[in-house]
Length: 166
Image (cartoon, rainbow, N blue to C red; front, side):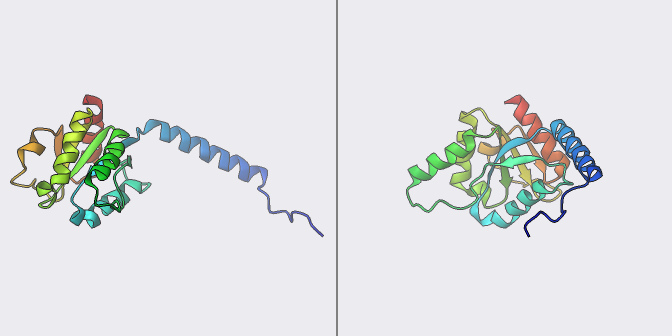
């Protein structure tokens, strides 16, 4: 009748869990989490989702909280959409611009860069591959802290530097 059934943790299990938790807390204190807005063209969603996924991997050196719009706003009211995006950017320290053919032609990406600059955010351009895009528009080149390739170390270094320099 009733009763717990003895499924509790042993004292040695509790001690091991406590030591593990303390170690993870200490390690987490050493890593600075950055709040990042990712600016990209909607057509690049699959690649940006890959970047988001990599940042959540426990073994990745890339550590940031993504404050980007994950799902398109269900509205055709551009003023409403701008307000919502502005709020997302406001809560970040850095805007990361995914540099693709489509994003570099996007009026929304241009607007997000302008807003990020107005709010004093650091801005980092990220490209996939070994060679940066040949034709990066001046509104990007003139407003970014740096342009780096899609590499965990390069992105994290650029994000940290842009956050500190803003």
